[in-house]
Amino acid sequence: MVWWASLVGEAINIPPEVMGLTILAAGTSVPDLITSVIVARKGFGDMAVSSSVGSNLFDVTCGLPIPWLMYALMQVVQNTMAGRPPGDIMPIEVKSEGMACSIMLLFGMLMFVIVAIAVSKWKMNKGLGMTMFFLYFIFVMVSLFFEYDVLTCFI
Image 1 (cartoon, rainbow, N blue to C red):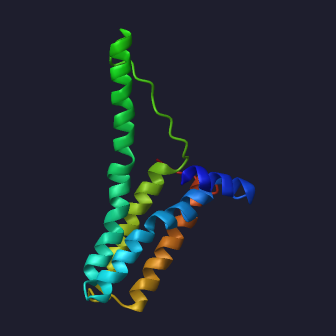
Image 2: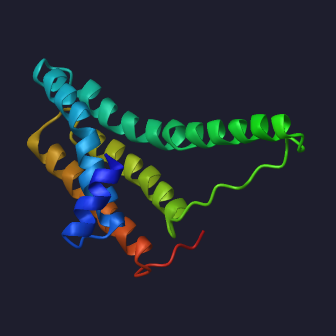
């Protein structure tokens, strides 16, 4: 999916950062959206909101570190088999200027979502949905600003 999005973005002159933050993020969230809509229509709006927030937190806390851990473990095994010290692991380069600030921004957005839900008296309504959409739009814009050095990450 990432390879396809990169090719399409290159063909229509959209940078990979924009493709990743918008097209790929939206495409991988469609199953979450469908399940959230189903449970919200059954009257479980809190479950729908928890699913949307939880999936992002899961991506950051498991989706990033688990593949990196597997890569490091594979290097330990390869080093051991080649007779090199097992701790001689090549670092994984992360090419993102504002990833630390984006994660902090995601945490801040989580706080805003909780506040917005509390303000709407813990009821899912159109105003809350629009607020969440607006917060997502702000997150994407600020993340792109970090990526393109419009804003500087202070961390």
